[in-house]
Image (cartoon, rainbow, N blue to C red; front, side, top):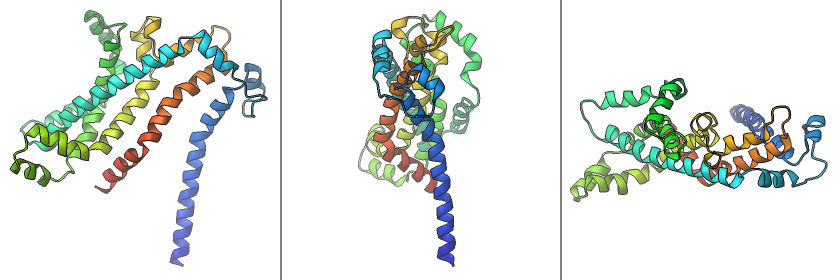
Length: 276
């Protein structure tokens, strides 16, 4: 009887997970199918298979926009932002988690408080400040904004994970004569790799998909990121939805591949955090 109850319970959980997967994946499936359709097909049969798998929309994306330029811009901004978030976030979290000092709790609360205030509420003073520093319409200004947005959550996640690592590792390394920098780089950070992957993916998705800050801070066409650049297909009276869906499909590919490559590390970070 107990085995039967467990079977029912597991079956119910698997059914819920399958339903959730369907709800998450079906819109993506429709988006990919729509990238092969014309506007007429999208409006007449939005959920049906395309009459012909034509690559005409892909040709329009290639010919009518600087798609490669927009893709490279988004890639550069995202990679630079993630690297800076990981470097500064990990350094701050390591100091808070592994060293005891009087204001450690206050510093951690300072970073956590940054998670409660949306940066978009301060867009006017932020724009004025960046304009004063001549950082409007530059990659540097956009990257600094994203780093400021990502640091609070990065410090919060990394601090919690680093605190779970045993202190005996550090003590043994100190006895062997290792410097503090060597202990951090060679011993502690490799163990914290799953948490770093979580931080990277958690920040890469909103940065890659962000439309708001590039719209406000970037005006030059050659500096536009991918979400901003794809708006060229949105007209005042008509929108070429087939081409738009093609652009969105191509834009989703890099993050999808990133998650596939780092999925083991991502799942390991979640499960280790849950167990610990």
